[in-house]
Each structure stands twice: as C-alpha cells, then as structure tokens.
Length: 244
Ligand SMILES: C[S@@+](CC[C@H](N)C(=O)[O-])C[C@H]1O[C@@H](n2cnc3c(N)ncnc32)[C@H](O)[C@@H]1O
Image (tube, rainbow, N blue to C red):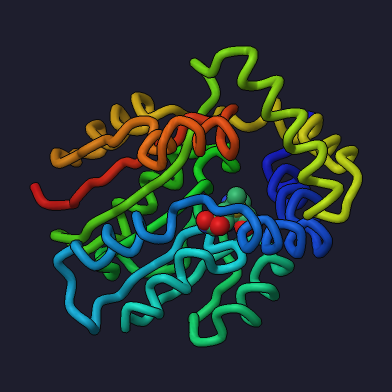
C-alpha cells in the first residue's frame, strides 16, 4: 500500500513524466476537444477586472493558462509535475508558474479572484482537501470554474470504444506504448474520483451556497463528437462563488 507522499511522487514523476507530458501536449494540439471556445466564453463572462488574480489549478501544459493570457489577464499556473510545468513554460511563457500541491495551495487566505481547473480533481487522492484549499484561498466574492468527469454511468460499449481509441491514440499521437497505463495499477486504489454530487456536497459543507453544475458538457459539440473524442468520460463543470 502506497503512502500519500508516494502517491504524489508517482503522480508527479511517473504518471506525468517527461514523455507523458510531451504526449499530453500533442494530444491537446491534435485532438479537437471543442473546449477552447467554452472556456474563453466562461472566463470572459466572469465579472473580474484586468488586474484580477487568476489561478489555474493543475495547469498541466497550460491549456487554460493560454486562454486566460490570450484574453489579456495574468495567470498563475500551479502544478505538481515539473515535466508538465516545463512544457507550460515553453507554450505559455508569460504564465507565472509554480510547482505545488492542489491539496495544499501555497497562497494566502482570500487572495484569489478566479480559480479555474480542468481535469485535475480526479487525479487527487484527497479531492476534499483541494476543495477546502480552493475555498480558503478564494476572495469573499471570488469565482471558481471546475471541470472534471467520471465514468460511473458510462455504458460499457463506450468504455470499450474509448479503450480501443486510446490504444491507437497512444501510439500514433503519443508515441508511446499503451503499457504506460500500468502506472494506474499503483494509483487507482488511492484515487476516489469524486463525481459532481460529492463535490457539491463538500462545497455545501464548506458553506458555499452558489453552486451551479452543468452536466455532460461533451454533448455540447454534438453526439458524434462526444462519441469520437470523449465516449468513456462524462465531463461536468461546477461553477461556484464564495459569495454568501
Ligand atoms: C489531466 S492533466 C490536466 C492539465 C490541464 N489542467 C489541462 O486542462 O490540460 C492533470 C494535471 O494535474 C496535475 N496534478 C496532479 N496532482 C496534482 C496535485 N496534487 N497538485 C497539483 N497538480 C496536480 C498533473 O501534474 C497534471 O498536470
């Protein structure tokens, strides 16, 4: 049984190693997620000013950070993996990048206007700690846009299709053997992979009142797009504000 520190080490150094960081960036470039416009609209429609403090939690190779920069804001990108941050540094050099843990955010209480985070919560052994940290560092009227997903209600056929797709995707785009996924044998028992109900419940426990969940966002690009690109993964977005 891995200790918490080991899980984080495996996550940062094996799961998100140099090769996987480069493969991830290639996936982002080659696979049209349809997410760019959604995020751009979401960020632009958030009532924040140009000097707002924006945190991209688990920035990875800087997908969201790039959208934020493009819209004239500054952004702080936090990530556990130095390999992901190294790619982000090349691709989004104006981002202020920090190596750190989403479950122990190295920022002061009530210091951030907007926190965005895509596909990070499911990689955490204690997502509730990250939620506590998000609420702690958020300003009293701060906003959060959190995108994650789960496969709890995904039909088996879609999971099988997704597995076959990712086999070819790994080889053709990722330039790696699908055996890299063995790392999840070590990680999986430690990842509770919270769904939106668990996330919302924890937020309510933390006193957050204004929570809005948008379900199965993959469908917004049409069913065909969803099946081709995200068949095994039901993505949802949780919007919330620290306003009481
Ligand atoms: C699927 S990637 C998502 C990257 C990026 N947010 C995006 O939308 O492309 C998950 C990221 O979470 C990071 N991560 C995993 N555990 C973390 C932790 N405890 N603290 C901060 N980042 C973490 C990984 O290093 C990886 O870059």
